[in-house]
Amino acid sequence: MRQIEHHYINGAFVASHGRGTADLHNPATEAVIGQVRLGDATDAAAAIAAAHAALPAQAARSVAERLEQLSRYRDAMAARKDALREAIIEEYGAPSARSQWMAEHPVQVIEDAMTVLRQFPFERQVGQARVRLLPVGVAGLITPWNSNASFICGKLATALAAGCTAVVKPSEMSALQTQVVMEALHAAQLPAGVANIVNGLGEDVGAALSASPAIAKISFTGSTGTGRAILRASADTFKRTTLELGGKSPTILLDDADPAQAALLAVQAGFMNSGQACIAGTRILVPESRRAAFEAALTAAVQAVRSGDPTDPQTDVGPMVSARQWQRVQGYIHTGLAEGARLLAGGEGRPQGLPQGWFVRPTLFTDVRNDMTIAREEIFGPVLSIIGYRDDEDAIAIANDTTYGLSALVIGTDRERAGRVARRIQSGRVLVNTLAHEPLAPFGGMKQSGIGRESGAWGLEAFLEPQTVLEG
Ligand code: NAD
Image (cartoon, rainbow, N blue to C red; front, top):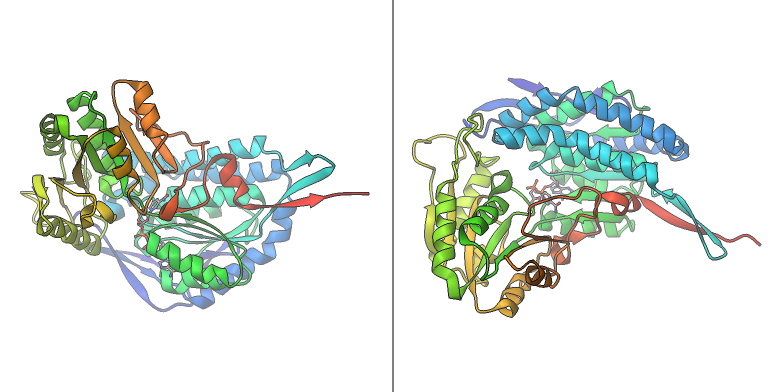
């Protein structure tokens, strides 16, 4: 049993003032594997005060000094890859390949922030004016459980690169992973107070960050509902906000796509991170003219997906993170059936032979209409919906008929046509025949998938405030 008792405040591990605890679980066995002590408003205030005190010095540090900080942080995360991977498997249940990637990705996101920082023009001449880009102030960084260390490291590295200081409020369900990040920060010997982490609930520590007048900026990744609450709470003090929220991303299979190849890519897009991905392509749009061929190929591809023990290298989809998340996914499968969708694969309950653990059956629905609940709401599990369309115009209209706008995938043999369709989708990112990722390009959502962008120069600018200087 692991007991996580400390926050990381002002360069030290500090005992929590908050007295509550939350159980940590192994989602593959449902066993309780530890407890995390939950911080309260007093812990949040201590971290905010430390970040506030450390701000003037961090803002004044040169690019070379900030790069030096980030390289120590990167190296400390790299040295803890194995520990992080173990925590990811035990506490989150990500399958082998995914957990390996999740353990290495934090190092990469810090490196990406360094690449941007090396090239970024913090001062520019605009006509007669000198424009300076200044650190916005103390940043509150609030992160979800579905890629805990990457989100913390990406946000924190970018904040520090900008000359800001920060207080991180990670998900209380990821405390073992967060502990590895805290230990790396301590080993990196960053100046006291520049980076603080407080474990706790969103309604306590998260809300304290959103309300604090000493916090100038909130960078949040999580659900659209929580994003809305944070935006409201931030309004009183006019905080700058970056919100990376949910999605209901379309995957459009054009009528010239090869069904087998398209199905493989579409299922990969839908089931990434065991379906617990904001960018998951969960609405699969297929042409009515070739519906039977696409349905057959998609069914075969979903039936080939293995849901089970995350430590087995053959496993594609691991357990859901929590009992609550398992119930939520079951509820959506139930609603899909009740609203008249037809199952092609999977369904309610656990996969055969897995009586325990928060495992779900990789599920594929067809005969889904875009106004059904399973086509409107984010499920956050391995549940995909096939929706038929008449022609390209109809496909574009259905793809855009959503409150979300995070990502989209278009698959087709005629690349020019696929590109034309892709450019008409209202989402922050559109992919054509690929699941590639460009870490220096902006990432974020249109509509209710968010506000602002992370990554690349756009991500750094989100922690900066321009000042125009004119001298007579
Ligand atoms: P969540 O919104 O429940 O929680 C995210 C974080 O916000 C947690 O740390 C939580 O404690 C905190 N929080 C909760 N209430 C709060 C409040 N009132 N004030 C301040 N903070 C509060 O999300 P989750 O369940 O942890 O993560 C899943 C969600 O995250 C999905 O909707 C998914 O789409 C989204 N997500 C988005 C992206 C993206 O980049 N767009 C990436 C990953 C996940």
